Amino acid sequence: MSEMGKYSKAYLAKRFREYPGWKANVQILRKDKKTENNEEVEIEQTELRDDDILYLQENYVVTHGILKDEKIIFDQVDEDWKTFCKQVLKFEIPKFEPIEIEPSEPEKQPSGA
Image 1: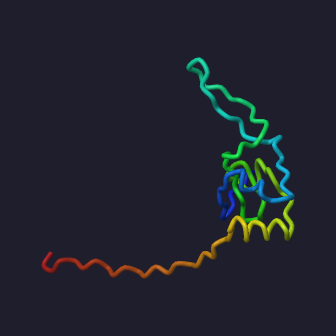
Image 2: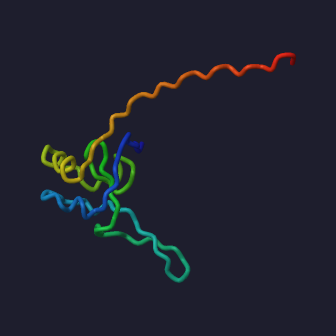
Image 3: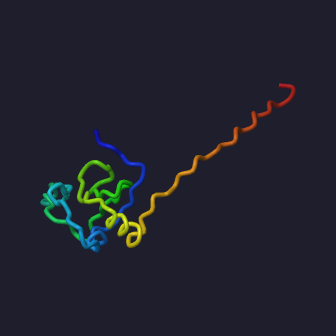
């Protein structure tokens, strides 16, 4: 079953290409949709374009969609990759603090009702 991560951040593909060890797995790219003769058709995408949107997941894997375990483009996660993500891409996983919600006061009933 597909898994939605807790955090990911979208980047253009050209940003990932700045990493010297970048090798994209283009065999699993999404299909593009194009209109031909007033009909929508799917076209096999065989390469990443600079303006394609990819997602850097919380586990530092790059996907071609928002799910962290599908359409994996890059999964060669090591310390050099993490450093690149943090320093060059400024990728930082936010710390989510629990929110305390004060209970509301009970509504007062009008007197004499």
